[in-house]
Amino acid sequence: MSHNTGMSAELPIKNTRQRHAIEAALAGARRPLLPAEILASAQQALPELGLATVYRNLKSLLAAGAIQGVELPGAALRYELAHQPHHHHFQCRRCQQVVDIPGCPPGIATMAPPGFLVDGHALTLYGLCAACSSVA
Picture (cartoon, rainbow, N blue to C red):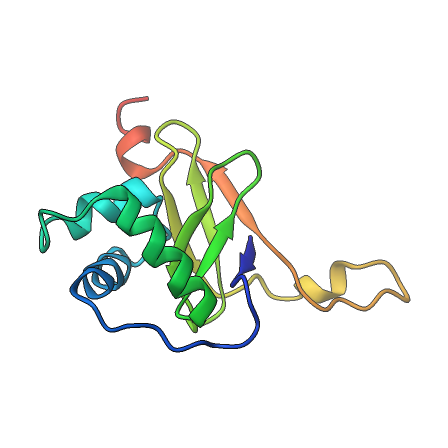
């Protein structure tokens, strides 16, 4: 998992209904979402919202430090709220859904070779989600 906020300094952003709908979609999901998933969720509160507006707001929210990008190998960039407790992700190989996994395995920093200093890490588990494994 790599979190990319785009910029290190938080910038002020406009308070708009669109931004609130996007942030509510991310908060309600409690998992990283693709832009199309954000759109579908946010349109429940704001049916006229379009994908271009979602992308424009995601860019502003990234620059402001309100959200962060979640990059998984071979997958499209997803977004989640910033400033969450440390966590990792699970990605379903069938439906591609990504969900949060709280915390870390104990002793992860001790896995580095002797003399190496760990200053960060990313962990993604892969498999089948509950829905996909029930139809396997």
